[in-house]
Image 1 (cartoon, rainbow, N blue to C red):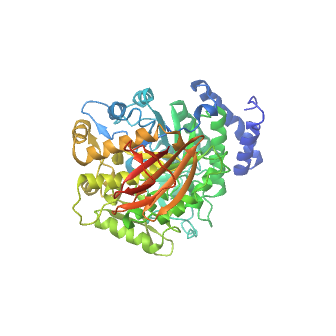
Image 2 (image 1 turned 120 degrees about the vertical axis):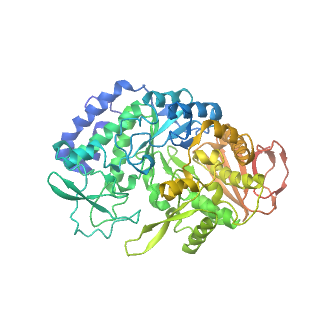
Image 3 (image 1 turned 90 degrees about the horizontal axis):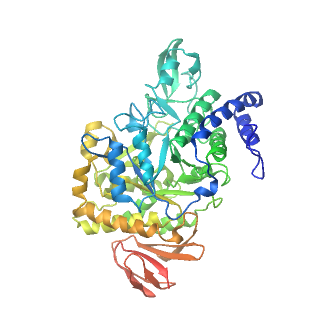
Length: 570
């Protein structure tokens, strides 16, 4: 990269060399630099010429999270069906489609990738992926902590192909691994027969998902080549899946190690040089303070981090009808710069992680939430603590059902009103909102799927025939939710005060009301959300017009149960 531009932003060549030196030492770093330059130069002609200013955050930033085969039509590639469905239903409301892993895979609903650079033929081809660009930006997953046991990389390793030497982490089974953070109640090491004998390999998530060895620089180069390939295929966002586990060092937690942060900083440096419009988003389901460390200094690491504490805190808020803990937590949210923001979400293809709420909610509060989820038809998944005990780490339930009242016979209108109040809080917070397909379209628990797969997470992963879904959206709960959510999205994407890096002030107006004042440049909005089943009367600090209903808002206002009021000051 010796011909790279230099200037006030610092010589990119030197920055990348520093990252490589930190990871591998000076001698190896000097050897790696020209190889990395070759990867960059190979992909550069395939990319549009853009600058970072071409990809600033805006209030229009909204993301739909979906599987590539979420909606299906017989005889049509599922990706084509999805693109057409989204163009019809979501144009002007959703800016970006997050296509969950659409590569060939062997397990975990896509997160055990066989070939990083291929499209699963059951979903379509790269042509179908490209067709989304007519109406949407795209987020791709980089599932790069681990790769499938069925992958070419792993088969090469097992067969003794020298190109794949040390691509995976072989460990003496007698090694003391008690310090390692375990996200699953499963064995950390899995034995495999290789050409040179039995090897016990590091498998953080399952025996089909083999962790990559980033201590081998050849692995880093292969992964960087994949990231650049995704950019060439049109990814505007790259989601770094399970990224906190990348670097292994026995005797440590093997989570969030300095080398992991350095690798992400290296990725950022490379992308800033060749594709500054592309944003990295880190998926690290860990306590809040550790999570936000992936912002780096606000300029050198991920542009977005998942706001993982929000889903469990929001659920607790509606279970208790009290917004105080949510308000206190939201008051503490800070960004290190105007170049980064939170990826706010309530639901995803995974369950509701409770680990990010620990330290904010008590263990008793978390257990009460888990018990209520069970009463509402949900499931609870556990992880090993390392001392022989287990702790709940994930609530497996559709978010709509999770907000319910056990045993209550409620109208569709009431259920929708409560659910939309929860979603409105997520939309109003500073950041970019990520909306799971099932939330937008009013789905509920899919118990039949859990029975089919035996996996708790399937409860929130139902797929649809397009015709049946279109018909279901015409009436009932789905119609209430989709219409209400669409209205909120239209408001969210047209009001500058909702800018993802705009100012945010949490107001203490009533324990049952989550109140946030959002502002950007000269625009402001006061967003009120009643999280309780009671009417609440407030004395407001301002008057104006409610964007949700279009009506005037007086100085004294009574909020109906679960009412949303977004006030534009007069």
